[in-house]
Amino acid sequence: MAADDATLVSLDRLSRLVHAINYFAADGAHRLVLNVHNRLLAAVADDHGSAFRRALQSLGLPLERFVIQVPASANDDLPLLLHVVGNYRRNGFAVSLQASDPAEAGALMAHALPDWLKLDMRRIWTDRQLAGLCASAANAGVTLIGRRLQDAQSVERLQAAGIGLGQGAFAGGPVTPAACVRDGQ
Image 1 (cartoon, rainbow, N blue to C red):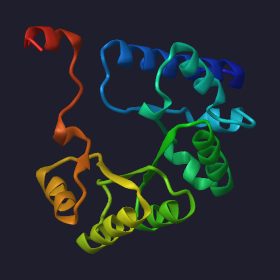
Image 2 (cartoon, rainbow, N blue to C red; image 1 turned 90 degrees about the vertical axis):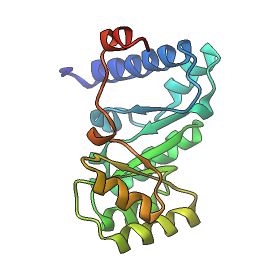
Image 3 (cartoon, rainbow, N blue to C red; image 1 turned 180 degrees about the horizontal axis):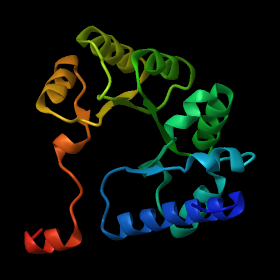
Image 4 (spheres, one colour; image 1 turned 60 degrees about the vertical axis):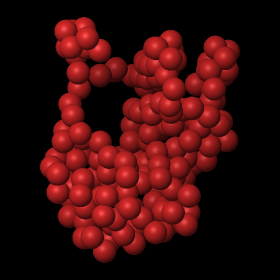
């Protein structure tokens, strides 16, 4: 909700840094996926990720454990998307993109070659499309993730296609800190 781009850039960077510190302070053992605000992509003229890389390095946090999730709105501007993805990669980050349909997924894999590609499972994906995409992703070294899983059928379809990762309401919703304490977690 920041009114100007400079404030937004500062808040976006601060938010990612706080998430990173909290995650590793809690002994984060896996990769951490961090979203980037869509306005940041246009507000930063060049070298996306360099400020975040320098901050992480100064804290001694391992760059290879971070994945930058580029907002889906960037898919509408392929030159900007490729520029941003290249910048994040040059700064040592893995990149996650999001696809809303099979054509977009294929184009993103062919042009941007993300490390992770999230597939919106609210959309219509045939079993053949999922299996073909899974084979293409395996050949390209792209990890596919089903997102917005709403039911067991979506999970079963992903698994049948060979896609083992997913997220969404069916997998479980957010948990409050009070619930974790109450449940003894």
